[in-house]
Length: 298
Image 1: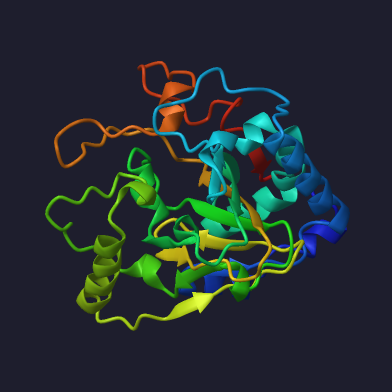
Image 2: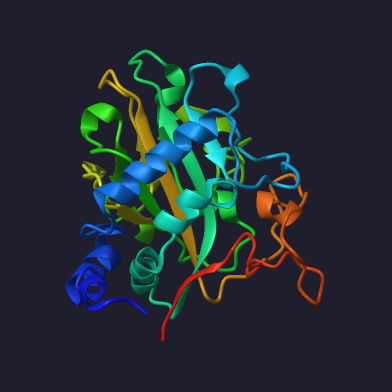
């Protein structure tokens, strides 16, 4: 149950309509300064080696920065699993309720989470995140309604290399892939030039204007975007690290489905190596250890 004060922070009907039309939404103030500061301090301990619990094993495709990789952009998946403070503060019911309203579902479950750190080096090539769609990484999901929450641990402005979205792109019809491309691969494993061409081709095919919007997100607030929204980010020009946690939510009806990659082999997501199995042997995307319910309609 949410408090009366929390209920006032939920998106309105007009906000939900805006999200449906534009594919993104900037929230009200969902966190206190103390909650975000506590998360930031816990991530410093995480980078120093502390884990509240550890993954039993690391799936082959998991993104997991370690110190020997150097001062590049860091991605650490399963941060809400390994860091109790992130789970408690950023996956609280209020955040899940916002996600559920945007997805128009009576239940929001955690799908995945990643701790991201962009070093304050304007010439670091790994800081550039090319245009991509989250759903392409989640081809094993039956739902096309998942939502990503972008939670900065400080005011995140354009000079930090904040999140950029293509307004309304979640409604585009997709074109066939270019020869040799595989959209099930993580964007880091795909050719950035191919991704840029794909964006331009899709915009032309849909007779759509490329409206690129940089989302300035204040500390304690969250930007949400649809899983079919084209998005990316530019270099960090601020001279200080950009620190963000992304938390993705799935709707109640999402399940595993078999999906074949262009070469014919089965697509797999990192969860498939970790979660329990359903009665018919499929990965269970409602496993409470990895995909707990964050909010459920009373």
